[in-house]
Length: 176
Image (cartoon, rainbow, N blue to C red; front, side, top):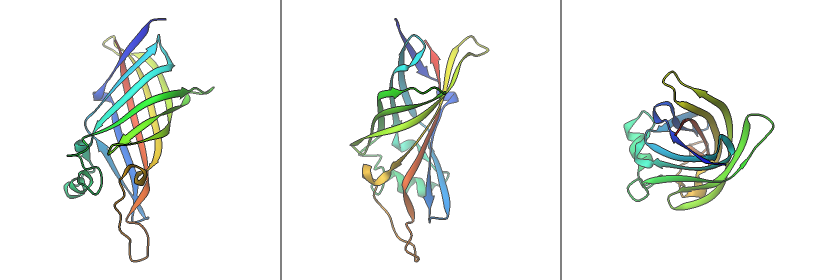
């Protein structure tokens, strides 16, 4: 079967994260600049080869001071480690539209295996004749495992920033 290339539609895609702050609320953020390559055998996404790259300096939480702190050495150190990468190693299909994507996530030159859940939204043709496929991907990581270990304690002894980070990507790809 012929290989099919799918290009990321960045205008209709996003990568976001959420982390507990002071144990009582959640801070959300996103990465503005990212890219991905995806190839499949025909339109069979269970055969997909997927790679994702995120520019750490494009992080945005809506607050400049927090963005600067997260881009600095306490967290991502965007100057020394400008990219976050994910390369899929296996896709585990299920009887439903939700699959598991296993792969290697690299942050700050630390690579760890992770598993994300991917909900396949389907394939459709847009009004301009482009064939598109959509996915909602989510997972959790422990930031300390990737060298993002800064923290402080509240007066009550709770962590200022949780170790667990929820990651979500809503992505569309355009068939080439």
